[in-house]
Structure formats: C-alpha cells, structure tokens
Image 1 (cartoon, one colour):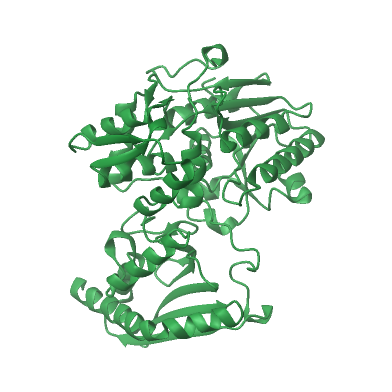
Image 2 (cartoon, helix red, strand yellow):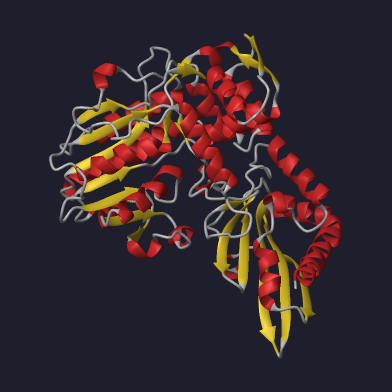
Length: 492
C-alpha cells in the first residue's frame, strides 16, 4: 500500500473543506490521479495543488453534475456534510448520499470511501444518527462502501480543536454539563489522512464499516485539562451542572469561541454520546496502523499548536462556505440581475509604491485589525454573534497572505488578484448582500487606490439598514483608507 495503484482515478468531494483539502494535497503529493468536485472552482484556485488536479464544478444535488464528476472514477471519497442547512439537514444528507450512490453505480465506480462518526452508544445525537444514515444510503447500491467512523479530530483548524482551544484559553472556571465526563476517542488529523490515503491504495474493494481512533480514550474534560497543561495554563476548574442542555451550551460556545452556534450545536450534541471505537470494528486487518504508531493526544495538540504559531494552518473548518439565505442570489450577481446597488466609494492617489499599499491591504483583518475604528468592527461582530452569525472570531488563516475562498473574520475572499484586487463577500447576518473591495493600480508613476463597499439590499428593510449605518461608514471607511496609506508609507 506504499504506492498508488495505476489507472485509478480518484474523486474527492468536499475538496474545499477541512479534511478534503488536506486529503487532496496528500494524494497529489503521492502522484495520484485526482479529480475534485467543488461548487465553486474559484474557492480552490489559491491552493498549492490546484494546478495538479482535474477540477469538476457542480453541486451534489444535481444529477448531471454528479455524472460528470463520477465518470471514469475508480474510488470516490464522500466528504460532504449539510449540518448547517437547518433542522432538516439529516433528510438533505440522506437524499444527497442516495443520489450519489445511484449515480456512482451507473458510472461504474468501484469503491466509495466515506468518513463518518463513531456511533456505538445507544444515546445517539441527531448529528451522529445522520452520519450513520448517510453511510447506509451510500451502501444502498452494489458499489462497495468503506465507511471509516471517527470521533473528535485534533488538528490545527478543525472545528472540534478550535472549540477545545478557545474554551480552555478563555475560561479558567467553567460551568459545564455533566456529559463533559463522557468518554471520547480523539484522533489526530494526520492519522485520519493516513487511513484515507491508504483506502485509496486498496487493490480490492472493501464493503464494511470500521471505527478509527487514536491510542487514548479520555473525557472531554480530560482533554481540556491536558490542553491547558500543554499551553502553559493553570488547571481549569470545571463545575458540572445538570441544566446546560446541548442547545444552551451551543449558544454559549457560539459567543465564546470562533465556532458559530449553528456548527457548535451538532458538535456539542454529539458529546451526549460515548464516542469510543469498537474493537470489533477494527481496521487493522485491512490497513495496518502507521509504522510510527498512532498519534497520542498530547502530540496531536502540540502539533496543532505549533502549526497555528508558525502560521502554517493548511485548511480550517471555516473554509466551508456559510450557506446563503433562501432569498439570496449567487454571490457576484451583476447589476442587471435586478438588485439595487448602494455604494460607498473612496479613492486616493499617492507616491507610495503599489507593492507597499498591497501588502497592507492583504494583511487586513484578524489580529491585524481593520486599520482604525476597531471598536466599531468589534461591536458589529458582537451583534452578528448575538443574532446567530459568525462574528469576527474566525480571524485569519495566515497574518500576511490570503487565498481565494478562505474566511476572513465575517468575510470570505471572493476575488484575489495579487498586487491588484481584493474582493471580500460578507457572511455576517444582513438584510442583503455586501462586498468590500480594494483595487490598486499604477497610473503615470503614481499609485491609485480604490476602496469600495457595495450593498444589495433586500427590500425596504435592507435599504433602511444601509441608511441607518451610513453615519458609521462616514467614519469607518475614510479612516480605513487613510490608515492603509499611512502604514504603507511607514513601511516604505
């Protein structure tokens, strides 16, 4: 299993997500023949592996798109999730998986590999139950399905790890539900990728469910204490109370951590179960453990922290797009799509080299701030969190460089033309759609900078919102542009 089989085309769905993006890079490094299936190809253009894969654009609920994606594929990785799509996410996931399996069968796919969740406890959450049902729907045809079930994934950028990290850092004293004492079986992201990679190398299709976990079983409270110790923090005081339901806990996590309430809810809900691998479902006879052994929790935490410190986070949970509201058209719809367009446009001409200006623009957001008026940005982010949005806590993957498709506080990078143009799409809760765009041009030996905020309001409420916040714009946007140029001048 050390070399990829010949003539095996591999399809990876969810390639713009946390696990999918890393799996693509792993298989590309192994010289595998990889095709990725993504909703928007622009989201992966900034990836180092983008030029080394075949890109198929489409949606998983469109049969024709799936036929194009699955044609000629030997092994298909199913890494799609719909937990952000409201209370009926389980029905959506089941329908998606059923159609995927049927079209895979029609296209002659030899193997489906699915990453699900450990579900051996009788007390199972809706989230985990949906994971089980998705696996069953994928296995409803003649195509063999190798289902790998994992627990909490520890790795830089994973939602579970970010939740653990921020809760432990910010709360020296915690009142927690009693189920934080339930047993979990965490696994390092490097071990997840090891098993997925070797699943792609199998010569004979496998039709079976396997549990995969790390070398340790411990409680969530144990993990928080371990994280605190490794981070140089004092022991956390954990007070168990019976009244914090998963719903209430997810609301609190949505305020304290970068993980939004909509994503925290299924993650927290899963903690009501004992998530421990069943030895009877061991994968060892099919894929032997890594030669160096499985990664223990302390090593996995240290590796994740070092990646964060060195700004080498490859993918993050927030790489997955926040679903738009039902009334929204696609991002980037032109003005002729029938929407009103409201703008705040600022322009400046300076002698400062364009490269210096661009350096400041690309560093915007996260811990670097928003070039003044940060208290207003913070306040807007806090309001967004209270109304169920993502807020500012997603931060940046890297303090200096951006790539298309990644999140930036409550924005997402929609367009990135290095040295010239940056366009951000707002993922905050709004009565409309909003963009913030910067353009840097050299004209007649001068540097011309354009900063433009654009808003497409939804009805009268959206228009009233724009005019209500316009007084703040008169302070925020001129200050932003002025400070970008001022910092660039200082750098120059």
